[in-house]
Image 1 (cartoon, rainbow, N blue to C red):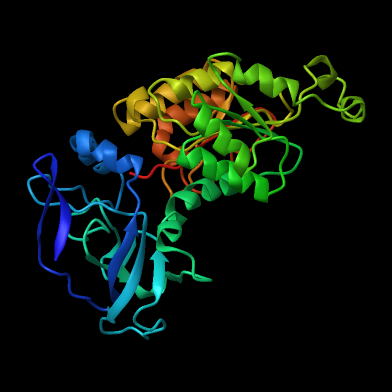
Image 2 (tube, rainbow, N blue to C red):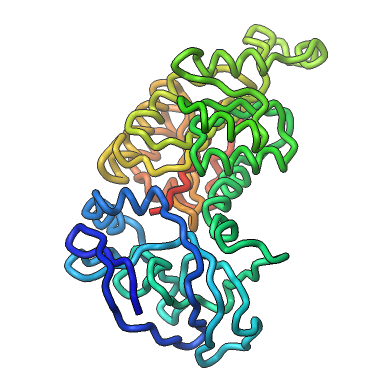
Length: 366
């Protein structure tokens, strides 16, 4: 079969063996595949992705001396089934899937792998248990957007929306637009969105943004504050000490750009006392260039928050939602330093005082 192969730092079209479906797997034909921003990043910075992968348990780094076939935003057609499957979809059915294979050794990624080719190939393998049938005759080109849209839906789900928040979406690229669509579905308004591109701002409005901002002309946080004013009733209901603070509704900020330094800018520019639960900041890109490795990124964010007495909740990737406690209590802070970041990031950590909190959800594709 033919495939667009990442080889020696270049994308080349060549022939390669067709994969054979193992237990629980399905052989599919690639109908449409999106070119993710992570693919473009991998094309230039694959060596960094390899180094980062070494820090995440269960992830097998790419061997860049061997061929890799990208492609994790796809719509495919069922061709044949391997052993141990039920054949729940007849051949010819259009399907999507989480870009992962369920194997005896555990889940394995599709695309950034020497072993599991992505949809830049004519054929690939998927796990039957993860297949989603494409409904209502939806075009393959549109169905292939399922994965990037899921990134936005996932980020909004992680935001723990309680009602009354005013969201600010920084960046209206594919992920930012997906976040806007998911926020609209949740009925949260007004949605403020910021992007330098007029075309992207227009798309943001079509997908549900109520207010769009050009950062070259207007400060996004100032625009957000204009639309986050509490009603007279909400002002009157505040506790006495909070009545001394700006009368702003909760801020819900999604960083959807990934430009180096931007997360730090968001921390510095976000409204400081928007609500008694504090601010919640959500990012949809890795902290890559703000620090060159996961530990450095964590130290960078921790240091910035430590100076402001703010706690951090972090989900380093889609599969794990850990919580890293940071607050102004010196005794607990020093205890966490002694215990190390790893122990304080265990899922289900009890450090859940929401009075002054920033939640950082990093939903990366890498």
